[in-house]
Image (cartoon, rainbow, N blue to C red; front, side, top):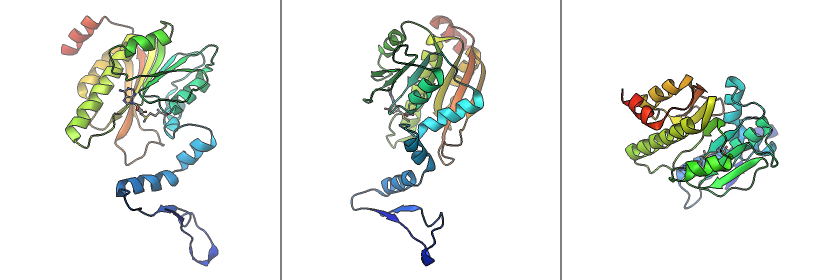
Length: 246
Ligand SMILES: C[S@@+](CC[C@H](N)C(=O)[O-])C[C@H]1O[C@@H](n2cnc3c(N)ncnc32)[C@H](O)[C@@H]1O
């Protein structure tokens, strides 16, 4: 049940206006806390007001404002696109249209169409996913590969950690395959989730790599974004493996 807690004396302060959620029978404490946080989150309200599908949309917008990710006419791949906030931001920033779509998104969840975005409903780790993404781009190279993917957690920390690292590695490998020289890779990572090996590998292929923590990413969350800019150009897979084993 949702309560608007009113202060005494009829005057409402910001604190008084906070929406409190009473725990309901059958609802876990963590779900109650999540719901309370959502209802009081200014980014959630702003996303709704701007017609954006996720509060996550602000994260890529803020990273772009600080680190200049987007430009008109560029091609973008959005990995883990649902419900579509990042794709919406990318479509607007690149000027993508249905007549000339520049954005391709993939998620195993179903999504409502987004103007200027080609959406694939598929698990990105499926063997044929990279080929399908490339086909959707008409065989052209991408200028930006961005990944906000995360597996649902199992609660078993070592398993969750390994799954996250694996997902980021597959995304990074894909980026190296499809990016045009000068391209950018952005991926959600978790503290302790960006392995030295992955960073080392990215540093070989990109001129700059760094972590970004946009203001809309909750301070108490371990998430951050790994940004790799200035792709140096494709390298045959065999060479890549040898490089990484040095
Ligand atoms: C945090 S959400 C992305 C939010 C999105 N950036 C937005 O702004 O709307 C993460 C998404 O990654 C997707 N995902 C996780 N693993 C995936 C995989 N292996 N293949 C495709 N999508 C995946 C999930 O289904 C989920 O929709």
